[in-house]
Amino acid sequence: MRKAHTCFFMFFLFTAVLYAGNREMKGSRLSVTGGAYFMQDEVFKEVYGDSAWAFYGEYSYRLPFILKQHIEIGVEYRFLSDKGKLTVTKEEVDLMISDITFSLRYLFDLKRFIPFIGPGLDYIMYKEEYPPTFPVSSTKGSVLGFSFQGGCYYDFSSSLGAKVCVKYSHAQTEEGEVTADIGGIGITAGLVFRFNL
Image (cartoon, rainbow, N blue to C red; front, side, top):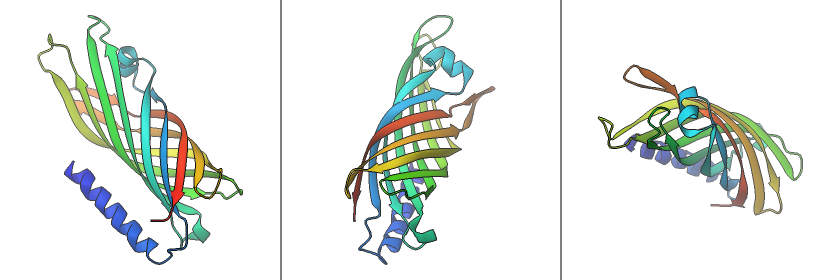
């Protein structure tokens, strides 16, 4: 968690320095979204099903000095919790995944519609809790991954908008001799609030 806190501090420090040069620009966005997350790993699908609900919160900032304000950086937090059943014994297991994504997006200004695409770097934390019959109670860890997303903003006004996004992520983790891909495809939608810091 110390790494995550350090990354957050560096991101907001970088944003503050850039923002100091242009206080009149309404370049900040706060997004609150939710949607379906589709697992990639076949073992996860057998235990938890094909998809689970996930919730997201993101702060993003439109850089005022680069490519005529078409570049946006963002930091996003995602939380996913799901229950599943083991394929043989049918005992219940719990899965929790949370991650922090640092993204870089290119924006296409089409008046109220603003499509975007871009890559991201993911820091993923996971925990899987097992039934009492297991020799260990849980497995947890963290892993770095990468992602790529595309979507669109729609501005209702200068302060309120909407966001839809499709995001592909890839991250592999190893526990003993077992390798699992905890990445997947997320399809989300929600509200966006625009403001000046």
